[in-house]
Image (cartoon, rainbow, N blue to C red; front, side):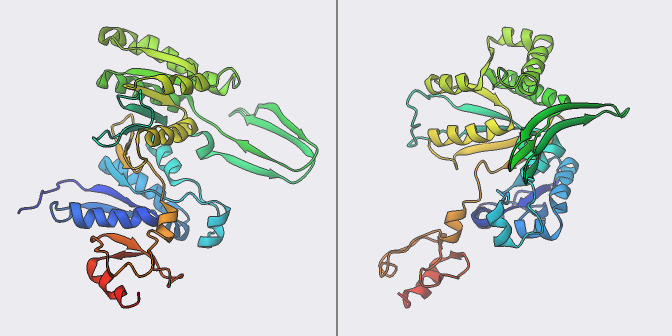
Length: 360
């Protein structure tokens, strides 16, 4: 059979742990036998990001701007434990955050509905699409560990040198500070992407923040969405018979649990990260979730909606002793035999399984 030809390469962003193994399986079993696959490869595994001082992440995002389409595996965003595990130079920021900032896109995540997988929320009969703002907030934050008593201030220095100061807190002991930001331009892009997607798919659009508490940060999101809706999309929504609905984030969560689905739920970056996992799990599985980053310029990055599956990577399958001989494992079983505690994660074929039979 002649392979499908590709005329333009796509950007391939390899990842970490179990998703790295699974991506290689997908290529070997489902893509390479049928497609003349052309990719520009970038290794976003944590070790390589550390070696390149995270420059590889920036390079992969710029390549996406060049070619227009990218496929990305799940990657590790390191914490303190990962610093020791991988002997990192520093605690590198989220590669997703870096890529999304460069592409200035919105992440749309929707569950894949199939027969046999019934949502845990019984009244959900239609997909709920999460539109996640893909810039700023905690994913591009700056943090300080406060060593002891002192005053923390938020300071903005304008181009002309004038300063605006707001007191954060007078510390009487150790603590922590976090600074987050966003830009009107990015929020506007997010809003237009959500409204346009709602029009294209003919679905209602919900949006939620906590503007009653965050009277400047979250309220700015609310105001920009409302202004763009009224000036650019209100008539289109009326023509299609769809609705734009704003509410507080806690109210939105309560309403979602009672809804039937069939709408887009626009969320700020962190809210979207959390709620997409909740929605996908409630629909049946984190793995059964599409995730695509769409930029205003029409660049697309297709990514995993889940993490690197760390626990399965270090011990993907727990074998029961003495049963390996009698059970016919299909090709593609992942295992680390218990008798090899330091054995690297291995992709076992049927032939390799037979080799372990003598051991058991």
